Image (tube, rainbow, N blue to C red):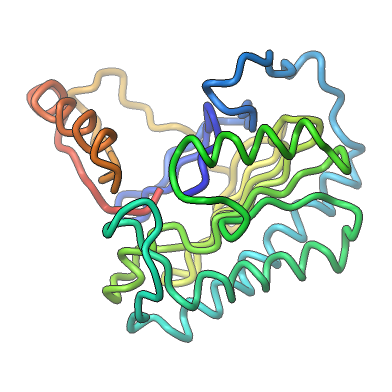
Length: 248
């Protein structure tokens, strides 16, 4: 999955989504020495532009979702990326191409960063984002993971989805995650809150971690995997339970 540093938008389909009330994510890589432009320093695009960005992000993610559903029984692995657990299928680039074309149709001057543009590994992802920002062709940068949860997709598990975000001057202003298996579209627009199929959603009301379900990933890279496993014995006794569902 493409990494958005400090992302404040999470997808947890089986248990319901809890989301922050607004996006505060920067697309600057975490290891970058550059200072992220703060929300207060970044002027938002006009309201009508935000509406248009959101509409295109939803349309693009749904078009990619249709492709996923058409191949929901699984797909053959065409190659691996960082390691044998980091998979890529022939459907990934098809979904990305579909999203890219949908964006270009409405916003031909916007920049685009997809999985196909980025070599394997976290450092490469960070370098790719930094390069796009340093050599910006536009104030707008679309960042896309065409199939978030590729391992699930390969094995025919209905826990995978297109992830589409648009950043303006280095700050994410629109993000959409479409779950085609359950016909659920999660969206967030900076300053407006987060929504599921157009209905407002909010963070859970649990006041203690003991009442919460903790969702965590199963990262393919060995170093990241070791860090995640170290968290298990610390978190497990303190929370209600932990789930690894494989799709952010």
